[in-house]
Length: 315
Image (cartoon, rainbow, N blue to C red; front, top):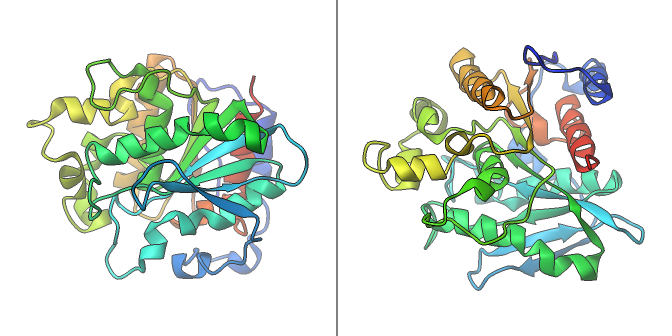
């Protein structure tokens, strides 16, 4: 893997650490990529608590708190799965919060609490537009109720998502820019220190170019409820790209799995965000697979943990 930073960006100690991690020997993972079926089998300590943020069976999250007395910074984790409840021949656990349990455990070891959110998706009653967004917004703001009991430091919160969850995590960082007329608007959304996307392009309209090859169907069109010509406002309000500048730090990790067309989507968003004045970093993970960035046993996953550590520490 190699670290690529956008032109004009300032190198700092955080990125020196990330570069060092990415240059570590690959060991037994060299030449291989993470299998999601194996990732969900990684043993994680049973120190999390499942808490409901709504009445639907899927409106809950797993809160994992580090050892100690706090106050703990928090990472909101948003899983992927092409915005769907079931993806091809993969088990449903791969498109659920369960896939991010190893990352949650690694963050706890690093002293960071995690709020690993489940939410309604395509295939669930109420999933898609606007239910998926409303679930994630409510789950995020629910941290205000959890903070006193679990000693959470809400001045140091980031959102991190994988694949389609990366797109949604970036939206969580952007939703403070929503107009009051939006169906997704919530009063006083919890501000974030930063957002991290692991292989999740933040621009829904642009992502439609690869939805067939990556997800196997017109999932974005179905998720939003129509095309950009039919619902331009939904695409604008449902993507960080439509709300720029979002005013928070952004880290984008992209693997080389899907080729140059895939990587170009990230480059286009990063260029637009930078032009709008947002602090954004695009970090390429050459040689890494789609699930390596959420595998804490892989160098890519270790780099993502380091990125989250850096962002939650920003004042």
